[in-house]
Length: 290
Image (cartoon, rainbow, N blue to C red; front, side, top):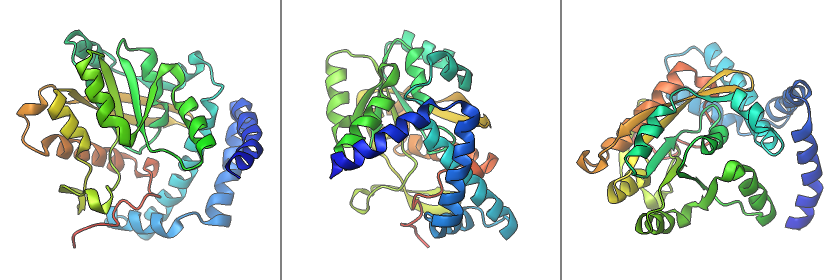
């Protein structure tokens, strides 16, 4: 059944990826109409999240953010399919890294890097970074149940020679690379809620005390990795800029959970600047302290 679903869906995905951008985004508008107005995908969750995180806004303002966030969500997932066939030249026009010299300086120090990102704007197109660095780019991802779609996602995200590693294999890979002197940059989107059984620390996120992922900090401290935050900004439809924000070049000297806290505050800044580009469909605040 998994294979049948895949072979039915794949030709449509490939055709979509080949569409000229003008038609591509017209199709995204249609998808938005269906997802938001017809299906109402996770609308209650999105509405509750925005009300929790942005209580200072009026109902009208929150509704506007809600609609814009769905529109962006459809664009972003459509753009992920576009990655299959987009040229390097076009990608580099549409996803610009404003201060690549930050990584270049770290590369000179011959220390691997932990690159933290959030589910904001286009974290998917951060894979273009791997064209511009000498280190091995590694993207950490959550495995998909359908093994055929999982392979497709890995193929898309491993474009530009990015190595994909499932979350449960991240620790062994980093340990292996460190022992063998394989300099790498590890990309993680760590702003979502950890599972209930893996809660080790709570912090304030958008004014609400919630559990936060601490694995990236733990690995950075254990292996002495430089830590950078990738602040991605949506410039206009289909165009993004990423600015690299150093969080620590000496993680062992930072008090416990200090790096995690700094990361969370950077994510907050992104959201307050333009909340419509955050991934509100996740149940980020399902575990919270009243």
